[in-house]
Length: 468
Image 1 (cartoon, one colour):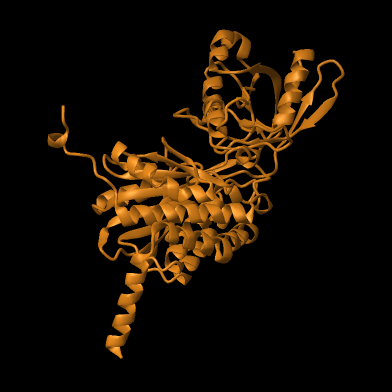
Image 2 (image 1 turned 180 degrees about the vertical axis):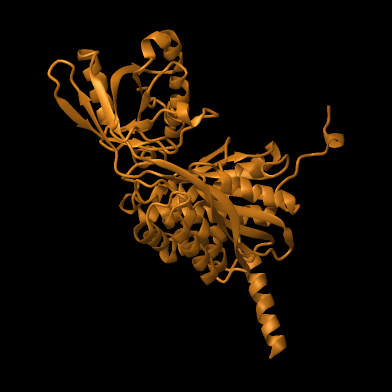
């Protein structure tokens, strides 16, 4: 009987290896689209746990949920990795209005505190407003014009850029650095146009910094919805002496203990060569974090499940990492890389999904030319699935700290046109995620992992091998 079982296992292995790459990818996509788990996982994570800001009770519920779900997959190892994370709490809902200087009438507007901001005075803050587009305008206006006022940063995302992420990158510094730059000239508060290409009533939060400013010099900072940014800008043109009032009650507490959640399929041939696939488990607190980054979490989990369901036995050790604290600290990604270095682990490949659960278009790669040329040779395998975008570029914030001279880092690149409609806002919710698009993303990630595991990565040539 034992010999018969061994023979059956051997035949199964031979059958698996005899399948073409086209057949394996077809099996992966079929599994994901007909038997996927990512959508059901996301339903629970979003609707039963909700927004998962680092340090919150919901974040800790998500850690336990992630560990339990990975254990159900029958992986070789599942464990928690300790991470010390910041704890910032929004408090009561923010309130704001524009007050006319002539009629003394008020118009309510939609705002939310930026992540890490200090609170206003308990009675709120009211002051005149100066609208600017960039930091250079602060310099031109100077302290005499700015002191005692609220600075309104109103530079919109650039509409004619095809990549919405490029548009985001072109204006996000006003959110992140706006308060510290405005304080230099005596501003008492900052209001920032939400990072959103669409005109709507949702304010979008996000991280900001005070650098090393002492607590007593920190000024409150909030985002205003794009509709209300347009309203405020128009009102300022008609009434330069209007005042803006806002109240927020956020608090920064001591750092607390949290965790990265890690699961592993140990490699059959090269167990000391590690692949990582992951997303970040934390999210902002306004919505339920379905696109940012619940989608990336469940897609990454499903990569390991799909490998097992497709009968693929990886040569290398494949890890899923659910990173904690990407949104306001990146401590999970840094901690994972720090521990990997301390243990001398050889991470040859890492893939991150943190761009929403929309239709996958391809990947961006941070790697050598040799590795990228190998990727380009696989494009025909992805063509039947309309995956066409293969470019050198960035990978992801959480896997970035793993970068070295020879490994491959990659980022899943879904269609970006709708992402910033939801990013960091109250409408980043489960109903905004399409089941089929999410499952296509999970299959696309699994396919790339399969190919790199089968063919390996190409290390950089040694200096002696480089021809002049």
